[in-house]
Structures are given as C-alpha cells and as structure tokens.
Length: 596
Ligand code: ASP
Image (tube, rainbow, N blue to C red; front, top):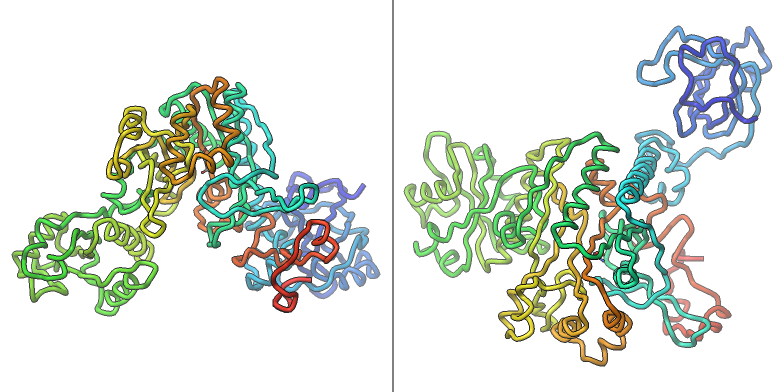
C-alpha cells in the first residue's frame, strides 16, 4: 500500500497512529540532529521529522532528499511542539521510522510554491510542474466542482447531455474556423465547431427538448487574456419555450452554482435593454458593481462657441466621485490613455468641481463658471467630484466613455471586492451594419430570430429598417464580463432564407452551407431557443480573476502555441502527401525553434 492517508488529512486526534504517506518533497530543513521534510500532495502538506537519536542512518539518508522527489514515509503521528496555525495539518508531524524514494526529481526550473519565481513562458513549458502549485490546483478543483454542480442542476431539470461531433462544417459564430484536412475525401476539409449551434438545433428538431453539453469550441481569433483558441462552453438548448422561460431556467442555473460552489446568493438578476446599456454605460456588458454612468451633455455643452463640441454629434461625460483632486500628471495620463489607438479619442476634457464650489476645467476659455455649473448639475456632480468629458460621433463616444469608465474605476480602486453583479442584457439588434465590408452581420448569429412583432418589418423593410430590427437575443453579464449569450431561434425555412439573404448570402450559398438545417426545418421543427455559457470565463469571474488561462489545465500561449508539447508543428512529407496537401511556404520560412 502506497499510503494510508493523504498529506492533508491528519489531525491531532490521529496522534499515536502509525501511518504511511506518499508525496512530493516540498522542502527539507536540518536542525542539528533533526531533519524536517514537508511532504506535499494535492490534499495538503504534512511535516515529517527524522530524528538521528532514534535512527541516525535513516536521518542521514533523509538529508539527501531533494525538492520534488517522490517519497513514501512510514511513521507515527505526534503532536508538534512548534505548531503551524496556517496549515490544517499544522498541529501534528510524522516521526519517521522508514522511508523509500519512489522517484527522484531534477531540481525544478522554478519554485513549486503559491508565489512561484518562474516567468510565464517557463511555467507554460513545464505546465505539469506549474499544475503542482496550490493556486492552479485550487483552480482546477474549482472547475471540476463547478462542472459537477452544472451537471447535477441541469440533470435535475430534465436536461440530457448529448455529445456532438468535432469534425464538422463551418458554424458561423463570427470567428475563423480551424480546419482539418480529410484523407479519405481528397481536397476536402472539416471545420472544428465554433460551437455546436446547428447540431443542438437539429436535436430540437429530433425532439430532445432539453439538451446541454459541456463542450470544447474552437475559434481561430487573435488571443487575449480571456480568450483561448479552444475553450469550453456549457451549451444548452430548449424547445417549446419563450425567451422568458430560457432566462428563468439559466438564471436558476447560475444562482444554483454560485450558491453551491461559492455560497453566494445572487438574488434576482436585473434586466436591461441593449439600447439602455449602451446609453448608460457605453457597453453591452456593463459592470454594475459601481456607478459612474454616462451623462449626455449636449444640451449644456453645445452651441456655446466651442468648435469641437459644436461639431460633435454627442458630448457626454462621466462623474468620477471624489476625484477633483487629481493632479495635472494624473489627468494627462488619462488623456494619453483615451488617445491610444485602442480607444481612439481625440482628447479629454475635464471639469474639477472644487470643494469651495468653484469649477476648474480644461475648457475655461469657452465655458464660464455658470456654464460649468450647468454641466455639473446635468451630471449630478457635487463639490469634490471630477467630470471627464468626451465628444464626437455618438456611438464611438459612448464606447470610448464606457472604456474610460472601466479604466478609471480600476485605476482608482473604485470596484468593490467580493461583489457579484449579474445582469441580463436583452433586446439586442438583429443585424449590425459593417461599414468596411459594406454589409450586415448577424449581431448574435444567423439563426437568431427577430422579435415576432418585427418579422413583417424584416420581410418588407428597407435598409434603415433593417438596422433597427430587434432580436430575441440575450446575454448574461456578470461584473462586466459576458458569461453567456443566446437567442430564440428561427425555425421556419422562409424566415431563415430571408435572414441569410440579408446577411449577403446568395440562395445557392445559403443552400450549400446550411441546406441541412433549412431542410430539417421542413420536417416539423419546434419553436426553440438556447444559450451558451463560457465555462472558463465563468470559473475566472467566480474567482475574481480575469485570465481564463489559469482555469485551463493545458492552455495555449498568446501565439496560440502549446509550448510544452510544441504545437502546432510541421508534419512530414508523407503525411502531407496522404492528405494531398502541398505547402506554399518553404520549410526554411518556419522560424527556428518554432517546432520540431
Ligand atoms: N452558439 C452560441 C454561441 O456560441 C450560443 C447560442 O446561441 O446558444 O455564442
């Protein structure tokens, strides 16, 4: 038997028991005749002591143990004289009577401790060592617990988990597809699913009216801290339901898992229409943990001879409470921040509402005290507050202010810790006009239904009407992160064809790509609707973190590489041959060290 107990299990009540533990050497310390070894496994750390007065030879051998060696120790549990209150096992130690080395270890390239000294790249390369560290172990255990809670809840609600294929045809979720060449079908390619969207709809046609799946999805996008090329969704679909029932079902799921895993009661989720979210927060995923809503200042700021504002479609601001005392340098830093290309504002106007009731602004030349007082009043600003104002084209200005709002809140620590603010954003537009490609995109995806009362307008309307169509589409937002999104679906062939047409598909293209789905709609498709949650992101948000990487056992880096296994990699000529593929890039163009 390798072990009678884990390294996290023994307590004072076990004193006197003879036990066997197996684990990794976290650290060793010598004190005169005593040698202490901390033995670690995923359950905890237990101190083992070797006493040379008891067994000099054994102690001598123990002194040679290195970090991360795998050992098995037999001994007796005893009370520690020098207790460690920070460890659950800190009241006891094992007085060793025997041990054996199960395996040696090289000196690890970084310390296996909660705060490691290893840089990101190194830890990614040795992910299996990084995964030994407490924070990552806790994250993965959290993830597992959350998945179990989701399955238990949905199972209890009559959902069945159905697996859908990974080798499929493109699903349009707005990203590029990863493709897989087919050996058996010369010159043809599978696409990896961006989501199981069409399959879950087909399951509804097949009569499985409550489906879910915890499933990998693949999207070839530029990567960020909260994006990975492969990520996990809790994917769900229901038939014979209204939007209301979908929202209630998945609000129930979300509340259940927060309660179950975090013991947090989320209460009822507020709802906000998309238009309102944009107007008040400059974002379709507003972070409701703090205020600083956007104020429209057109009425008080335009028409006063300040050319920049007069030419603007919108002048709007945010009130930053208690920050009238920001220094010149701090304000300059904010100005630089909004002028970065990612934000793209031309400049930033500020108004300080001084404690003595006067105002100081960066546009004093154009606006006197009375005019500034009118701004402050419009924004509900009081003495001591700061107003930050942007102007320009309405939509852009709102987005810029929404970003500034988040930046200021983070920069000046205005986001309360340990708070969860859930929100349903509803009534999304159906279509989104893209200036660059001069065509409409589906705001959610092409299978999303317009609101029922919008169908006639959709079938007959002009371009401007199309822009204003609303969909039965919804997002679940928590703390400013999009946790889930879904919609009521089109289940009628004619309407689906019309939607593809609006999106710029010719009938032949629509038929070629989605004929299977439209065909299925001709065989008794029930009304249906669904949602998918970003599972990795949910894990991160529940833990107050922004990087999903730390919740994925083996993630990719931000070049989309797995540096541990060194993927992607070249394949050999014979494999290319079998797949009838020829590379247009010569081998020499592969950067040295990129792969095998
Ligand atoms: N397939 C959608 C997505 O991945 C979710 C849904 O509409 O159910 O965002």
